[in-house]
Length: 238
Length: 238
DNA sequence: ATAAAATATGAACGAAAGGTTCATAAAACA
DNA sequence: TGTTTTATGAACCTTTCGTTCATATTTTAT
Image (cartoon, rainbow over all chains, first blue to last red; front, top):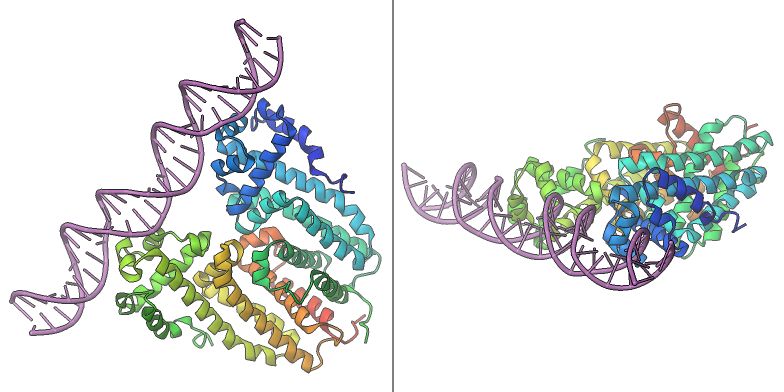
């Protein structure tokens, strides 16, 4: 399972494509893989600090443990590096979520909702760099970040939820008087908020969702309970 | 109604207090009120761009239509200005929400939820500067912003929701098997997400909640429907 | 009406940040 | 052993930004 979603599997083929576009040099492609991933990790992590378009070259170099000169040998200039990171991040993330979707849709709602959240949170914890990159784009990105990074990924996320709810509706798990599209958008919003609050302490300070008294498990349980009762056609228990 | 919540009512007394702390000079207090509010508006608006602690003095001056020199005559230095803006914003917002709370708790859930959201959104539209200030603190603020700005306001917000749900529970409008505290935190999270998405285009690009096809009214209607069915002890309609 | 006090102004200063270059060194390869 | 490829980081230069201060303007007091 972990291996199936391992992001580095898609690396080589994608890099070649981006090299053709002139975003990276041959030198980068032929680099030691460890060095490659260290650099990408550093780029993502540094993007997470102030948002992708505020990226600081010198800090990236320092974080990756290489010299600025090398970065310029790999990417030519800052702009290329930015576009490269963006393309890579969007492509890999879309790929990953695409893989999730069918399995989730097959589960009954009571299971698919926690599974979706748990999957998202786990992804956030293993791929910290990539997730930080997106969180920054979404929550403090520039308008151009929004268009080129947030929109494409956001649409993938919504598609997963839509597929989940559509399948559930076909199985009669959802009230027929609900507008499915709009319901999917609301549920999507809720799940993103709850998921991101668990990954981003700043956000949780705003929502005040998780607290020492309310473990992450209890939150998830109550969330599923609320959503299930909100969506289900069956009558509520006493 | 508008007048009752008009934020400028609290201005003079608060400024005097902050003057005693050495955050503002006598000069600022004796200033033409129009100039005062222009300056505060400019500070809030500029804080909204990159977060309160990234505030740019020169831009504030330009936006307020005054000289940098004047700003230094009012606040002494950038640090004082930052603290002053923070204190003012936190105090005024807490005040405002405190005023909302009792009226909302008296309403049945089906009305209090949309009223809360509508009130919040209207506040966001009239007090754009102040709201931008908070949004920036919450979504791209520094850790120090989190502690001094986000936490206090976030707690006020949660208190309002808690009061609403507590009153509703006492009236038997909420299933007794739900953990009230946790439910309040979840509902709070949902409402913030939905409300902020309507105020912040960047956020909505992430949530994909509002769209040309889904008017703000329809979103609100479905939201209330979902929450009501999620919370209510009564059986769902067929 | 005139002096004195208070307030307003923005050019100029200096420090810091940050992108880029390039001469030089090291490593890999032929 | 020579040639190509890759790595390095000090130095350069532009921009940004907080702050100061000599000067001008306005307000208040006598």
